[in-house]
Length: 310
Image (cartoon, rainbow, N blue to C red; front, side, top):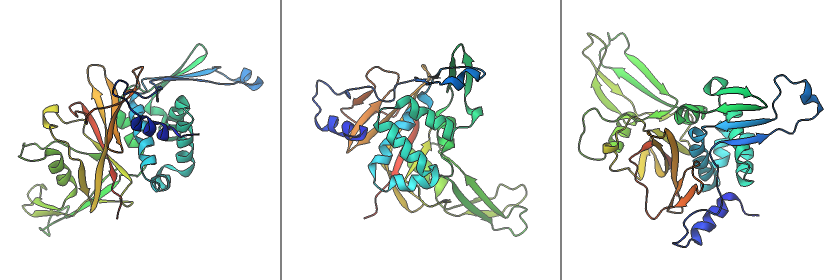
């Protein structure tokens, strides 16, 4: 029996121009999980026999990307198991490959999210879980310490009250440049976060020079990174780099999540073997092979995978 990933790759290989869509829905929006209750369920309070999921687009796109990433490199499942847990990774892949899409969403919600990150209520015989919100809150921040980085800085003034500083971040937030320079804006913004530099110390009355070391990953270079791009304007996203150098490691563009502000809806795009696909769980035909790379004007995040060392 072919895995879902093998089915998707086969559909790309056997594609005909008149039909560029995958043969069945993948990770459709929402979901209903029916509970097969036994006699003991009668004593439960409150009693519900199904779980209904709403507004799941805040995790759907990233779950699709995570599945593709885990299948891109045979070593990635083992590496990600160190952060997400072996049982989670194995169960996640099994549920995706068996098309158990509602269950795989519940796996993420109950295993990785905190209760305060989503709304839930019992309505009649249904437990309703609503994931309306921000995808970076619902997904990226729940990746444990996968992308944790640290940067040290030293002030040249021995009398500086905060001469030695450490800046540790659990996610990678890429802020647009305050002044628009010439060149690749995204790469410049990434370099500003990761590269060593010297600036005037901002401590009041100090006047010294602060030297920032290169930002490094706390737990080694992760298999993939998510760049939070939600504060960028569409006009500043004319060019998206297909590779980045992060902390002495090369990363290749794997995909992106897109945000439609009018619909408050997230979708995703990713590539397999150089072919770009667009995923939108809200559509009936929700996985489509694209003729060309997507436009990233509605960008929420960029996802890069670590290049294989030769």
